Image (cartoon, rainbow, N blue to C red):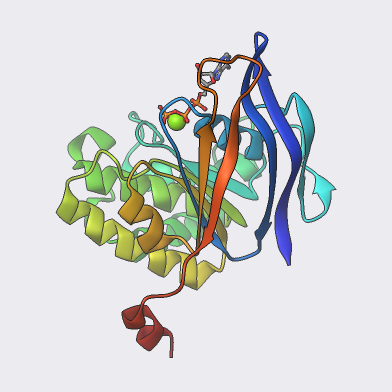
Length: 245
Ligand SMILES: Nc1ncnc2c1ncn2[C@@H]1O[C@H](COP(=O)(O)OP(=O)(O)OP(=O)(O)O)[C@@H](O)[C@H]1O
Ligand SMILES: [Mg+2]
């Protein structure tokens, strides 16, 4: 079943076409990697999927219905940096999405509900290997730990669609390999749909079930934007097949 459907989507800023005629159907539970040169509109596309931006033309639907006008908890997002709140501890950062959902004005819960939220946050921190750092502040964490925290925070609201914008690009290769394993495991466990932008082609193929490419064919022509020039499905590697069997 298709979760996200973009039909003839364009984005035009100040008379300059950034994205042109994007048609894509994203199946539920798939992991789509988006690659393309800098400035071709990858973040813009994710921002449209998040309802932080509306297409200049065309439609995007989620489960057959037009996207809500505002970001909603069924769509989570992790950026390259600065996804988490520096003034909150690791545990508080992970509790925040549930507190905001329950109490948008105070962003604070009390009594039994607060305890339940704290327990759920601790379980999530164990899931991403951060339970020992629960009382730390983000500045006290390594880059890899911060991104695991950002993933944990995004997952707390149980999004059906997770949008990742170069989430691992600032990490060293060893840390990145570890977080790839974690991301794949979380994806398999939650069965969410993931759309990830990356500049790293091997990352795109290692994680994605599908890799799409955005490219401007006429870079200097403001009347033309980037299009989807390739759409490749990725076969599971032999090693992964054994794990799945
Ligand atoms: N709100 C906006 N107003 C005007 N122009 C914008 C806006 N957002 C993005 N753009 C322009 O749209 C183009 C695409 O930007 P976008 O950030 O989507 O690229 P990208 O593919 O994510 O690049 P990178 O790989 O460097 O992150 C750029 O030329 C950018 O300047
Ligand atoms: Mg970008």
